[in-house]
Amino acid sequence: METLDNTDLQILRTLQRNAKLTTKELAEAVHLTPTPVFERQKRLERQGYIKKYVAVLDPERLGLDLLVFCKVKLKQINHEIADDFARRIKHIPEVTECYNTSGEYDYLLKVRARDMKQYQEFVLNKLGTIDTLASIESTFVMSEVKQSYGLNV
Image (cartoon, rainbow, N blue to C red; front, side, top):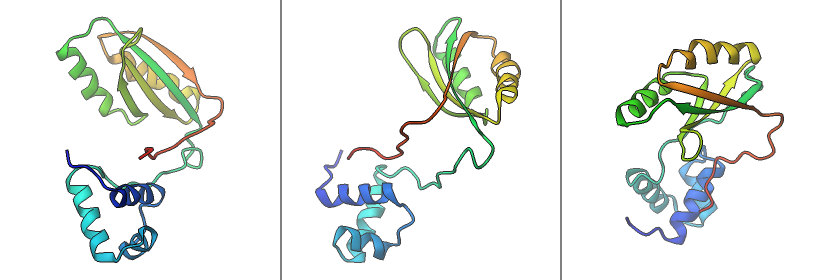
């Protein structure tokens, strides 16, 4: 893995705050001219430091007021079962994030829903169709204290 210099890190930090900057604006922010900044940004993309650019949407403005962390335990776990679970979860739009975890539960899901009724339908009609599911535990978020999309680089 190539070592990143301070300018590379400054470019990454700046893009995390605002990925819509033009090359010229980014160059001004990191005190370089546009050509080397453009080349560095493309290299960071090619090397996988920048995975993609996205718009961060406001779930509440879109009517997705309920945020739930759902801990999932499977009846048993092996490569085939884990691969099947991951494949199925990737196609469920209510699941915005999924992590394979250690400890009492096998997976942690971040789920967005309009309301409790939609979450109940998600549990019964989507998670409930997974034969290898042993149990779930839902934690309902009352308020969001901190949300950060950036990494501390």
